Image (cartoon, rainbow, N blue to C red; front, side):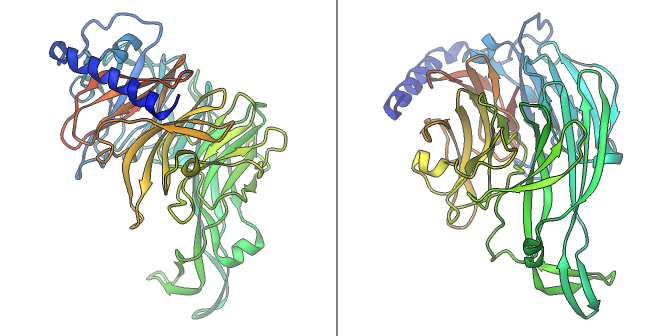
Length: 456
């Protein structure tokens, strides 16, 4: 489908929405009698704490049928009618592929690190299922985690250690910075911790001497063979020649933000043992692979893992999608998908994406401006097999902020994205994975400072 066809499909959907807005159910679907459904679509929203869009006052969830989600005459009010998911800050939600279960690990606070499983029954009816699981002793009260495999969750933590040096203060010589890696596996069907691991991880001698080290990890996924775990990584660089001495007498080497970023890296562990860690390196981009709130890597139909990167900015040519080979468990450095090149844009930054099958992906992205800030919000359909993409036209693109987005929902051939500016109403948008056509679904009722961040 070309751009003109995309615009035509959007215009037709918009006309439908305008003609029936008068009968929109402003009170939303009936939450008292949600009924039964074979598939629920759960919508999540984060609430403002101190600043609009900070998402630090917790998360609300509400579920509707696919028919309701697609109906522009339906209004969904997550913030007034939904259930508050336990979490001091934005909850890190995951869901089963059939939409029947919702999973959460509370993020920060007194109950940070507590895992809960919910069964989904429509409206605000989410029921606790199975044991409460405490993970904080292993991966902190604010773990990064994903449903890494259907029925399996993996939570991780990466902590940079104090930099090693030789000599006596103030005459010291920088050596290296290692990283403490903690990881656990969770049984999501019968909630419990099934495996834990902890180890020290170092980069190559050349990288260490230059001041590079892993500082954050996230987005674990299990490969198709179910024998490896890939964990995304963010790498920082210190200046080996410049440091200050803290109040505790420990030297802190200064950040070196002007130097080239490290080549993209991923941590690989054996699964399910979580043993034999190694770091693989891409020669295609200097972006990070740990993402922020949304899944960044997926197992493709062909068995390879497709992994989005962030942080390249304008000078680095924008976000890429890399490929980890099913045959070598290492990067296929002959493959790279450039979102900038596919869409003809500059400085793309992938906020979230979803592998939808047959090499097709739905991408939510912003653009990095000359000041280095991410601006606007956009959606595109990409083809990883031929390196192409088509941007959709959606309202309020300049005002949209997808930086907190957590999930793009998939049900059959439909992909669902919650689209609403911070503090303003919006809609669910539905994208036909096969044809590329876009339609406008249910209205999303917002509140000041809040934002819609996911569909499951």
